[in-house]
Length: 229
Image 1 (cartoon, rainbow, N blue to C red):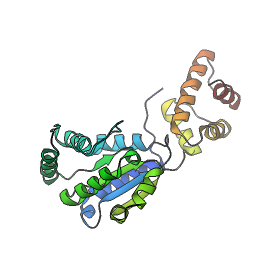
Image 2 (image 1 turned 90 degrees about the vertical axis):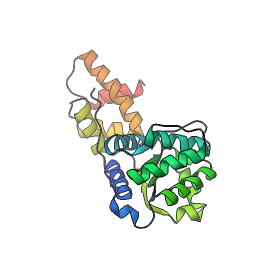
Image 3 (image 1 turned 135 degrees about the vertical axis):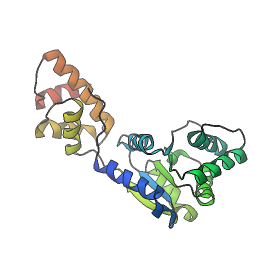
Image 4 (image 1 turned 135 degrees about the horizontal axis):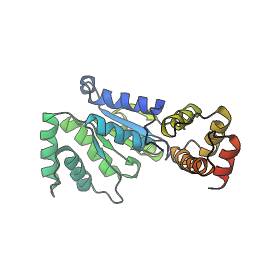
């Protein structure tokens, strides 16, 4: 199986928001944005792909986070350093943003304490740092509870479930196999809109195809594989 990136409608909209935040127009008005959706819909993969291609600073999830820890991670992604003091981090962030304005992407922001969300808002305003918050549905409630934050959200995006067209495209790109409508629809129903379920099923289907030396992915094969996992 090839490790192929699927350019879904979710990903296209995600990239457009990121481009807007970091572009010249992002200096006009607020430059905070929020991307939400259930786990498994591709938010993290989209963020990592964008960061790798566009020099954004992607901050991965951490089990325990304090304001200083988050600042240190941002500083490291921007400048390759992790100062121990918050003021040193802020000084470096200021210098880096003056040198080249870059987007800061915070993953699993729904798990952050409100104190950290407020700190990110202050960072955004004081140093002109465009910030994108990513999280599950709980993030919407947290942001809505603080008008200082919610009123500064420039763009909002909800990641929709995987579509049948996404499934067909994924199998064609990753496995080099055409998937007819019936097996594609069956996979979609069983995935619950989750890319991880699609990927797990695809790995099992590829294994079954190789073991049986068959060339077509049938509805019967999909049902057998999915029920066996």
